[in-house]
Image: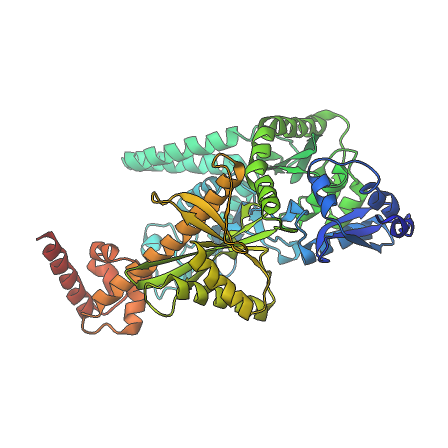
Length: 592
């Protein structure tokens, strides 16, 4: 198909971009030899994800680089720019909790998460921790043991923490500098791996409480010490040089790559990151790209241990850190342990991963074929809800390649409260796609409305006015409110789909999701409307105070449960007393 064009691709490093029939970039890769790599997609048989991607290629382009390093950087930048659907490595990411020590203007500890950690920010971060609970537990314990600043903001005078010697009196700036320096030195020493600092401090406090016959507090600290010992016991896998390093192990089989990264901080194992994903290109290339993407969002340690197959020189150059392959000793054993874990994870999770793909991506592909669509990358689904014509709302959920894209979900409060599904659908479709045209945001390949021909016609009439050619279908429920029929918006005929097929389960999952999302929004609006109508009866509560109360409590029951002090934080005392009395009388009337 591309014989002549392929003959012109040079034997040089660079980045290549695969495009579908609409010219959309669906995959970005890199290669040491562009000619060899690009040709490999068209001169051999492929399976799995690679075969699916190749079936969609209608064209390709490439950019020649001066070096492999330049090709690496080019690939990462193009992935960020175009977010191709087959470059899945950036789409399933999470941040890890760190303990952050802030020294200015006051010494303070907090649990932080950062999606992008840059060395130039000079933040004092310790971790990552295996979970947020462990990090919070340590922060709370350090706050109890040391006189750090506990409150937020700047108080006018010292508070109780100062008088019980759990704060140095930062508000009055009457700070003992020697105590401050000793405290900071001990805290940083513990966070840098000196465990005895903390355990000795706890034992010291326990003895003090026991001598003062405060056995309850001593017992509480004993529990904290037991927890710390459990955490430290889990970190027995260690190297004694106190260097922050990561160990990268992996295992490739049946078209899937399993990754295991161990985090060693101050020589101790504190947690790890695992992932399993299908491979489109050469698995070593996919692995290297994954690592660059991963470390663009996470802390880069002083040293990364990885296997010889990976390009240590280029990775180290781009990440500005030391990348090495140990050949013997404790480092080699730890790296082997990481690779073994990657192998075990793949063996344990492969069946679940394949089943997940069957109910998501493969079901989406089958639906595309049933509806005779060329592309089905994105589905927008709509549902309407009202209560006898009041509190009318609509919800839109989005599925991309068979999976929920929750960041794309949208809520719509309908301008006219009336029980009119046709005009409600017209309003929400117009608002959604007029805005998409103005902002030039992504459009779907398929729109599914909750309902039958009436809702389909409402949607199609708006799309015609906006000059948009998008496939529309309707999902009808049976008398038991379960997914029953898929109506083709082009022919108005029912699409026959077996009830036990993965496509039918996929449609049910989508319909349940849009219904859940819309009903939740409707209940929220209805609850706020109910509060609003009740507050109209209270003298002294205008629009601003009404909004403040709704924001603070969210429902009538929460307001009824609120204490007078809690109400007084939002509204003046006399109005709070009047409101509490009104709510109490209303509650008693309802019981009668």
